Amino acid sequence: MTSRSRGARRYAESDARDGDIPRRGAAGAIQSEELFITSRGRLFRPIGIVPLSPTWSSFQLDARQQAAAIYLFEPGISVREQLTVSYQGLSSDAWSGSLRVLDQERARVKARAQLEAKPDSGGT
Image 1 (cartoon, rainbow, N blue to C red):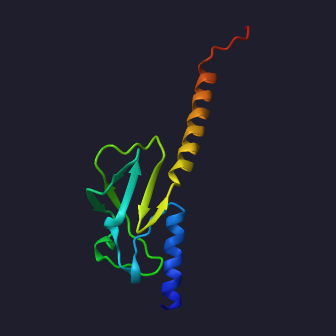
Image 2 (image 1 turned 45 degrees about the vertical axis):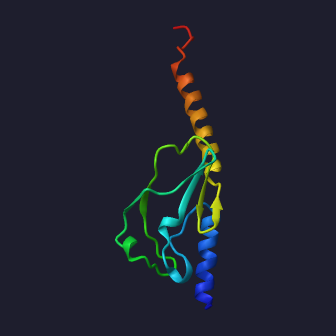
Image 3 (image 1 turned 30 degrees about the vertical axis):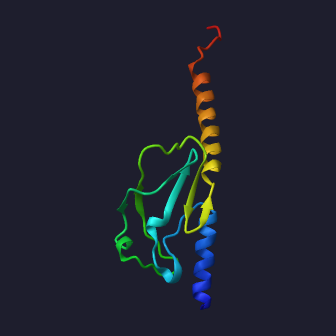
């Protein structure tokens, strides 16, 4: 294994741990159908993939090259609860951190809206 391929493997593994699912497997081969989501104890496999990048269908990427697509899943994934994304044996629960941030922002917006909705009690 060359230092370049070892570096690419480390990069791919670190990205997946951070919640970013890379599109490369051994020797740069793309394994796009190996992305799974576990939600509410149920495993969801993609039912379709819509490529957004022209490089998506090449099934081969150079080091640090990216390709984007939209994954389609059957209904049932709860985005308001913790979920796990898995790719080639690596899993990420990073969504739970995103949920916390979203909940905090919702609370801030609700608090601001309630303050703005209160009538001014000052006398004129």
